[in-house]
Amino acid sequence: MPEGPSIVILRDEASIFALKTIRSVSGNSKLDIERMRGRRVVAIRSYGKQLLFQFTNFSMRIHLLMFGSYRINEEKPASPRLRLEFDNGFINFYGCSVKFIEGNLEEAFEWAADVMADCWNPIKARRKLRAQPGTQICDALLDQNLFAGVGNIIKNEVLFRALVHPENRIGDLPARKVAEVVREARQYSFQFLEWKRAYVLKKHWLVYKKKTCPRCAGRLTLAHLGNSQRRTFFCPRCQVKFPGNSG
DNA sequence: ATTCATGTTGTGAT
DNA sequence: TATCACAACATGAA
Image (cartoon, rainbow, N blue to C red; front, side, top):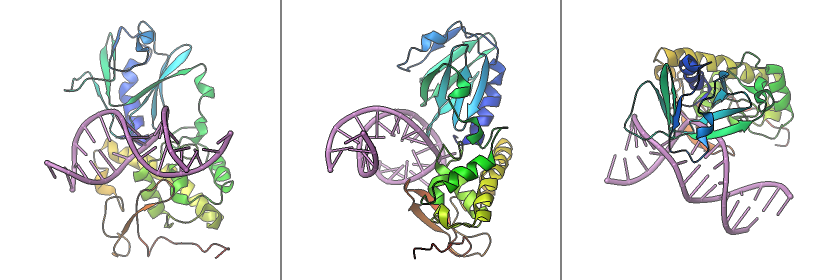
């Protein structure tokens, strides 16, 4: 479920509750979720992997983590962490993290860092990457301050599409390659969104959970790489490792 | 049946 | 003080 494009789909589905008033609140969240009762939803937004219900002086943030789920106008046999009821229906969230964000939402996030956002700023992303030459590119793609919304599937697919070996340090990549990774991060995320909407995402994976390189037909490598130690699928033949200058 | 994974946060140790 | 390893949460697929 929960990489940026999936949250965009959730946001769109939840948008039937934008500008509506919350009539009833329940759930097993330990927070003071009652504070939302009677309040009007000013906007339903997303930032990276987070869904946001914006109210007048605060916002409520849902993060589905790895296995969180939701239902709109539909029950499922589990107790919701949070349930919001409106005049036109309800939404349930399960197994997720709920948080309140006080004050102005505009200042709460760097909106231009969200790969799905209209205001996504690739130049800023490149500048931030350049500022950390020692970081491995596989870690950089998962850094939500650099690429909010990019998760492990997108990471793997982007690196393959750009033909970049995951263990390259940013400082060893030619500027053109850095730009390509940034461009692919945005482009593939939207491709992911379209395929997910059409329920055909998985069949379009080129390396994630795959065994064979679609380009050279060689065996793909699976390793837990980078600081994050997340699963990384890559073709050791097609994805280039650029030489560092320290040897 | 058991293990693992599309993710993040908090805690306690070092 | 900073960094790090680990636990916790939750659920479906292999």
